[in-house]
Length: 446
Image (tube, rainbow, N blue to C red; front, side, top):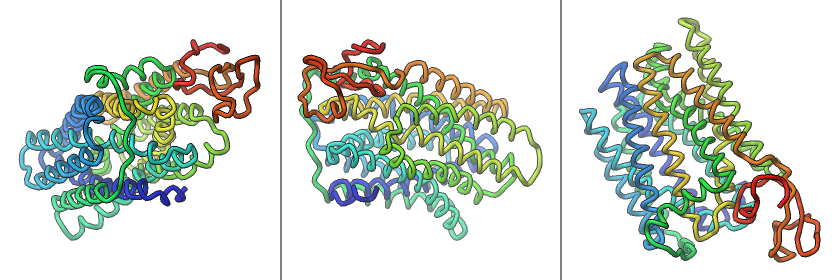
């Protein structure tokens, strides 16, 4: 897996991602504790609203950035976003009103909505080989997982010697270091795009609503959003109120989620190399989420017992594993579906549409938890996750569809193992709904 780090461009980008993620992880812990200080037992409601504002920024800003990204140097766009994020993080320790949290979260996440799709679109251009890109996706997922594991542990250690507001300084350092690393490496130029601003802004979304696999990905995004919203919004409530533990146990719960996700990210490259289909892995992960929610609802009914903390950690780890099964192969799916000139728009659309799902689930997790209790929140979000997973199964084509191709060169990589039938080539595999398969109507054959 680490062989892809030999590429200088990707090595610098990956380092920038890791450092920025650690800083963001410290801010996540600090923001939850800040919300608890400002609102007490209603911290979940405050945090849910703040995260809904974050998602609104993502949904609104990412498509606009996708429309103009080809007019701006990638380095300028990414570095500017990092500097804005560092400046906003510098202000967070001085917040003493809930409305201030909301304003700063919107500014911070608007900058992230500019940075992340641009970063995601650079990676397949820097690593055009399938094997390298698969490993880069796993490393990227692993970076998120290690952040979920390491940042809470680091936060727990720092909280023993300093107030939580000092954790925001780590966020500032992370974003500044990310900007420096992006400046230090040459970035590949994106393919030229045509069309007006409106067409460019909606190009990625049109792909998602046109291609079967990407329509299924919309449902998968909703299933993952339901699980991650429960973990992100209500971890502090489960630990502080349900279990009656100190603030230092909040990072432990978040770390369990990261550990489960990391274990899957480490195993997936080998499974995918051996022929495991993206469809199979992603759908099984989504279906697993419903079962984990059922276990969480059962746990929430227990009013006492020392076993509750280990059970919560196990459920959080299972949430992380299932989410990673869905999220890790997502980049491969999008890369195969989008032509090179539309990759930035496609990743921007995924960023926007997936966070549109979080825009629904974050406030739902917070408001339900505060108004109706944690059990009602677990049952409702579990129903959302299970329903979305079943919809994805229905939307995504069955593997092994027999179909033919015409117009491809005989040595095209996609035709490996295909049989020639007249002027066409016939073979069978799971269909991603990419540019090579748009001629298919959704039934076997073509």
